[in-house]
Amino acid sequence: MRRLIRALVTLVAGAGVLTACGSPSYTYVTNSDDHVYFKVPRTWHRVDQKALEDVATSGLTATEAAALRSATWSVAYDADPKPSVDHLLGATAKQPVALSRVLRVPEGNRSSITVDSLRNAFLPITDEARLAASNGGTVVPKADMVTDEVVQAKGAQGVHLVYRLPLNGSMETFDQTAYKADDGSRVYLFLVRCVQTCYSNRFGGELQDVVRSFTVENPS
View 1 (cartoon, rainbow, N blue to C red):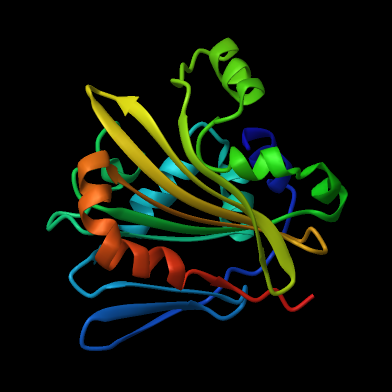
View 2 (view 1 turned 45 degrees about the horizontal axis):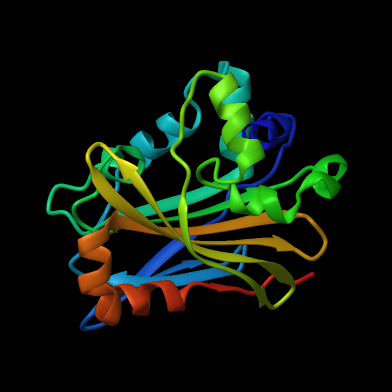
């Protein structure tokens, strides 16, 4: 995925538009430019956008960071009363946190996006990706894979994963759906994570609704 991010820095693209409206129990999030929709409980709070983008562009030059921002749409929500990007990307998420991201892929790089690329869209999960991360100085534990299934959407296909990782003394559960548009123009990611007990206790209610609400309708 790091290679994909580097490939995206040459892309000039318009950013998607985010609108949100509420119901008595949910906030509905719509990215109409990229045809992505999902909902989260209204008690969840949006993660600071600048902090989210700063983490995504960390280590890039100013030019690279600007190009990546123009090629990426992302938004995150946190069930914690004090939302933080650290809950999404840090070692422990005691409350559920959700991330939605769209990467607009340059035409010359579209054929390189594989099913394993989708599996590794958030963390290096496959053995090959974990080895590459380790060689780069980042050690990721081997995931305990609960679900690994092929999924399809309108104009896109991908994988749905549920996996567990031992992090910082606790077991974290990641529920991840990633699609590649049929024409390769976009990669869509939706992730919900929290500690295993949180996920197990809350999946039968709100978390299941959040995961199932993620909808992609690629117009190609």
